[in-house]
Image (cartoon, rainbow, N blue to C red; front, side, top):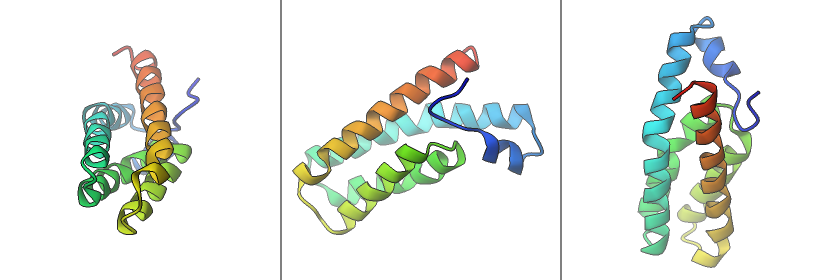
Length: 114
């Protein structure tokens, strides 16, 4: 049973197409971890634009996968990067986002036998 994601939106837009759902899952597994890495690198480099770009790129995927807590974190990160905030203000949010993504990756791999 999925704890960190919910594919209800994916099934709703695809008429319950399991193959489509798996494609979305694969897209998540390929792109989101790389963008979280970019986000963290941008944070280290104090590059607000890089942080914003990475957060903005993964936001729709997190929403589609029903990852509400991670989605809230990404919105907070976007807002922080627009305001050009200090690193210490957002560090814990980025850490939490990374942990949520990692938990979801483990769940998806288990649920989809990947």
